[in-house]
Image 1 (cartoon, protein in one colour):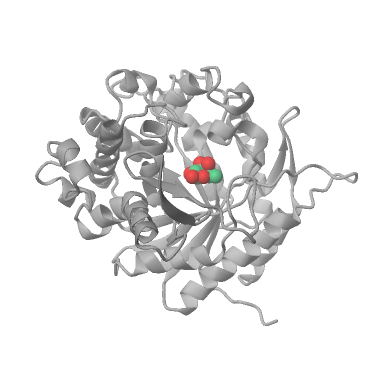
Image 2 (cartoon, helix red, strand yellow; image 1 turned 90 degrees about the horizontal axis):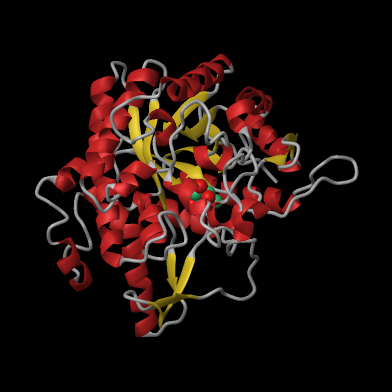
Length: 445
Ligand code: FCB
């Protein structure tokens, strides 16, 4: 087989997020986030686990960067924890918290790994939640203030910024399904949250630009899924279209076209009448980079299972599955194509893609995670296919560097290229990590 060559300067990276790896939730003045509150509420997380210690990255960051360097990674996407930097969410800055990221950035640069900073991966300061959280429009201004603080500190060295990770997930899983913090089940709060998260992206973009002197690229990362109808029936097709609108278009239209698909819909009309204000859509539509997080597709049928949307997800037979999702490599290509169909003027890159595998150490201390290698191989091949088709995908960030705290599923779902023994915190590079290192070295699959 001939090797699939990637363009010169293709960005090979990994991604993580603060609450999932850092631990040290009470150290150096860090405040409380909605994820601390949620994970300490009995029954919310599998086995009642929490991120108090996680992968202890707050103490082991140097060792972790050394591992990245060994793998030859070109870039690292991580998130800064808002409650570490502004424990109250606004006002007073906690210098010790900011210093952690300052050191991290310096060490990455010393190792020639480009930092891609994400300002918000769901760990909202609890005091701001107490003031109403994302359904409260004031939160947008608080977020911009925080973005300015971080940019002021790191902006002389960090050239690539993501304002937020997957605003849809926080809005819908956190406010509609209630499986994520803050655990609400309220469609009105969901739509308000989503709009405010998008608006906050725009305001934060402006705050970064005014705080930083050097040219920077600013973007957002989105969870996107190609949506398929379970059958050819008109009802199921309509169900798939509704889901496409409520998962993909609801974020892509405002960011890439400056329009909102929900403005015209009956459900949303009443709820959003006063939410989307004049000028908001122009603020939102500011993007130098769009990060695509792709894991799986959605196959939908009409049903009363999910209220309001009247849909149900179907798991097609005959395909491979992981601990969380159907494995569907072709969806990677379809997702990139979907974005490209908007004719975006911003750069596109894959900012997350990965698979949970119940890995363990073999007798000789190795982790033979063949399933992850197969997953990587098939999905990266689809990224290559997109590039061949003329979609200029700039990079691929694997989720994740380390096994970590997988939100409501706790520590059971291992996503890392590096195995973490959560009792001893010992790290072991898995076979997939070595495999990925080889891909990076050859810049080819
Ligand atoms: C994404 C999240 C990330 C991780 C992966 C598996 O939706 O951004 O934090 O949980 O899924």
